Image 1 (cartoon, helix red, strand yellow):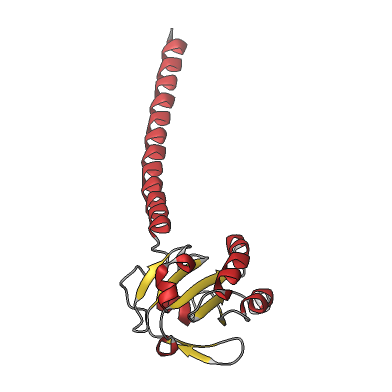
Image 2: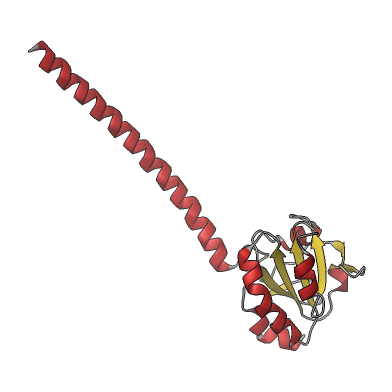
Length: 178
């Protein structure tokens, strides 16, 4: 009889421990769900880059062909694209972007973030259709536009305000107004 009581008490203790651990896991999952929803909402709302109506920060960078580019050198409506050398979606989006940039009447600025040696192919493809800046992750242009995910696209007016964001900016009527 004593063995049976000890076994029941041991099983009850294990059940209580399991219950406590389950509640801990559920609480953690709720926290992670909130963070995941926030990240997903940011991605689909287009907040991985400055939102429409925001003014870009100050920056100055050198293009791959040696020109100096800054917020003050962006004229008319400028399409700005952010790519990363480590990003497969960037590599997938590159051919479509190059084709669209070829037909864009205004200025196009492409920022390639990552290792300069690995950026060579992207620079060669983007060079004929845009100004190309190669910078380290979190470089001055990326900081000025608060670019947190790649690829990222926006249109900036001559005063430095973001007037469109998202992957479809090349088809936006504001690009044609340039």
